Image 1 (cartoon, one colour):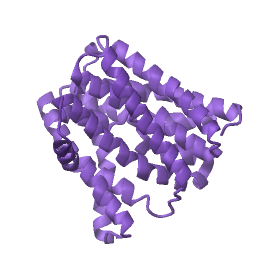
Image 2 (cartoon, helix red, strand yellow):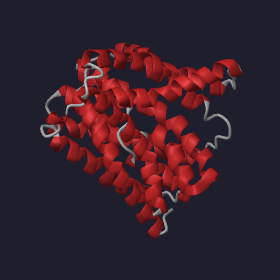
Image 3 (cartoon, helix red, strand yellow):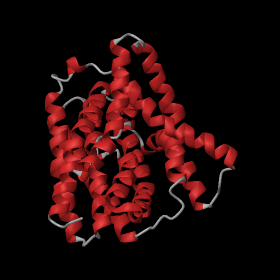
Image 4 (cartoon, one colour):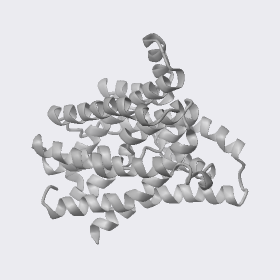
Length: 312
């Protein structure tokens, strides 16, 4: 029962934000053109604060285990390489290709890893989770920009691709955050507070906008993508991840953090990025919502099964 409470407590706020946005749309409190403009504003102005602060705020007490970091990074890169080969074979539309690749590899790790790890292991696991967040989240975002730009423009020169990556608001926020970490810079207290508040606003606002632009009549049309992503992302890939964690003899805490890299829902920011970078925003939004809802069951089952067989 305690494990179920951990999963529900982690996921339920996301569903509340989305549900509130959907209700606002249904009661005509907002209109879609305005919400699409608001989505652009959140992507350009608020996501950089979130990326910066998540990296900046993980500096204190981070524990960098090089073996663990390398396993995480290489695993994500291998998964993306396989998806880039496989997804174009089963989907012919470029806007959907980018969204599907992004949905399968890119989890809401930044928002789930630390609270889930703390719930299962207590404060002892937080530093290890924070260190993986600092490495994996910038990697997620760089790869997302590359993938969406590739499927938006077909043949993109390396120079143009690098230019577009550096212009991406999330990457800019991550770069500034890493500079603060590397040079051990600290914001003045009077600045740090509003920065943290802007960062904290980002996910609720992004998910509210997502809910307000959802059209469930298209869910039936996209059901094959939704069921496929849930099956592959939240069941098949985590199984492979657990096998890898056993092969490399990860600790119980590391194994759980490694699981959350792959088994948590599709990143909320993937919807905003798809909408703003030529992807299928409608499909991206539905994948965020459905995997978030499904994760109440799948995360609970993963915690319960791994505890039962003694892997965490």
